[in-house]
Length: 160
Image (cartoon, rainbow, N blue to C red):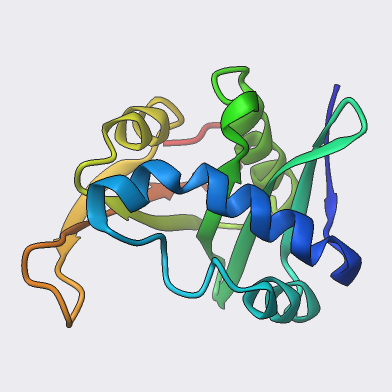
């Protein structure tokens, strides 16, 4: 059974290690994982700032979710990661469905994902996200991030 609960500072090292394993494919494709996620301090600071959840499967932490409340009904998915040993078990889908229920007043969800992360593209599109733009981070003109968003209707009964 999958549970999603707020992460605690004591989970920082374990979440960092899972995060590093989860982003190993990105490291092979792009030479790095998302900035600072390989540092325990990043996880500690984000846990303390709130909106950081741990994903638990059968009593073990198997992933994490970091959200940012941008205000005015806009939430940003800063990170979601699942240990590779637990991927393809619908845990990611369960986690995103959980956060959408947890924040029912959210009108817009947004996120970014790398351009070669085809599994991510499929995953987010399957859950109702639409690619709206492409961005080049300042330092690297070759690297592209795909920007996705999901607009929620006023009744929150249907997700677009």
